[in-house]
Length: 483
Image (cartoon, rainbow, N blue to C red; front, side):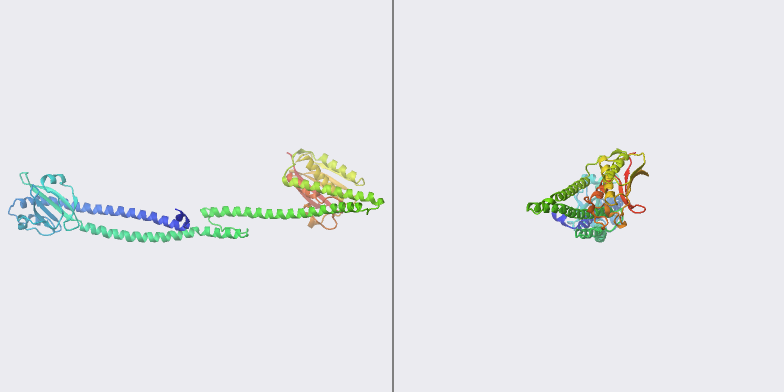
């Protein structure tokens, strides 16, 4: 069984089909030969029945001489064998495929050397077999079909028995020719069927070979490879469709993983760089203070710078924690919320930071948004802080909330230098390095807008940066409504 399973599928299919076809041909051939032989033997039996009637009519004159010459010879063709016997079974005449003369009929007989090998021909034995043809072997080989019958006198008394037989030589010869023909035709059919099966199986399995080749290329790293399509109604076509779908998903997942790894590497590198600066400041001032390198009159200023670096580092760590929580999808509990209160709170925070600014709030919606309260306030706080950091002191800022189809659009509008069009998508990336007009010299961790984008996406919304007419940046956030 192990050796059989190790054979290629196409070889196993051809062998299995050939074996089944062989059994079918043998069964059909055997049935055909059986039916043919039965038909030929029935024909012989029919001839024997007719001959037996003629023989019984004339056999009495052979057993009891009537003066009529050669009655048996005149009654039967020369290919028959005729055997006459007395009532006790004593054989008195045997004619085999030749003319019978009166002398041969009456003169007794020597030991028989030709014709059928018959058993007892007494009256009782013949009565049991009368009218039923049977087959016996021949004394000189071959086989004979025999019919026996009693011979009666005109008064009804039994005067002897008679047997008439025909050789089955012609039947056997016909059967041999037929068997040879069936063997030749069956062998040819089997050979052609095996060849045709091999070709069909090989052609049918060719797509599997192509799938194997494609799989090898994919294993070598070429994820763009796809299986050649086949008719979807076939098993191979269905398999190819499923594999191509799976390969597309695998390629997408692989590229997404690669992109995620690249972003993670960049994020870790940028975070390390951002943390290195305040840490270096803290370490440097601590070392100077330890060796007495800071004059007493400069200590307050140094402490101020240490505090600033510490605050910056704390803000950076807090923002990193927020992004990590966003990546894990935790900390959000969306509930129906009014947007006016968070907008006005953010405006008041900005007024406290810069009392010289004109901050306006406009709410043109009565619908509630589906959001997390802390997340919504963090989004607005970060947008307001961004406007304060990158617009001139005293410049106006507008905060608005309006209906926009089936969502609510929030906007924070400043009138600063704005954001170049090429950077309006990148501005929401983590630690995005833009042109010199928007650096982090104004403070902050550089992650504020990334947190805005992450929280907005987690709430099922979206964010976009547009240009403010007349100059400046307009940060817009779309959030789903609660109803």
